Length: 147
Image (cartoon, rainbow, N blue to C red; front, side):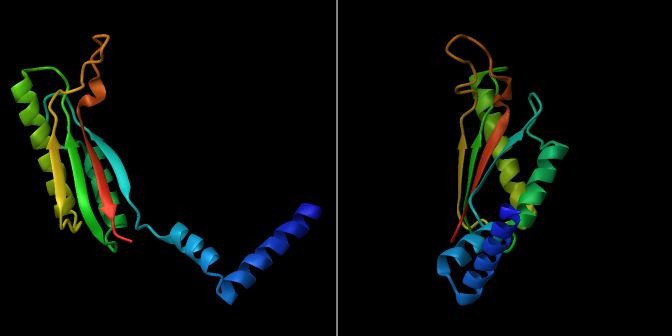
């Protein structure tokens, strides 16, 4: 009973504060509703492939749709590869992966006024203890959104 009464009082206080123009409450509430915030995601690739998987394509489409009304300031991409193949081929593969992800965001309608694209090849794909990191076949993406 006490919790029910407190819940109603808290809700009433929130509504009164929002109606009265409490800036801090309004900013927090607006931040919860807004989809315009920096976003990071990871897109994985099949071995030796630079083509986005169906799941990766869907993730790009959903992210682009969510950010459509936002001011995207920068798209940061880091392409990676596993250690299969030569270091030169892995570097080229990681570059193509990052390029394809950039193209996918542009095709999906994400405005990209600035982008940073880094290809790292198989750098870091083998741990110090010699274990191969298979999840290194990826592109790490960060979308920096203006406030």
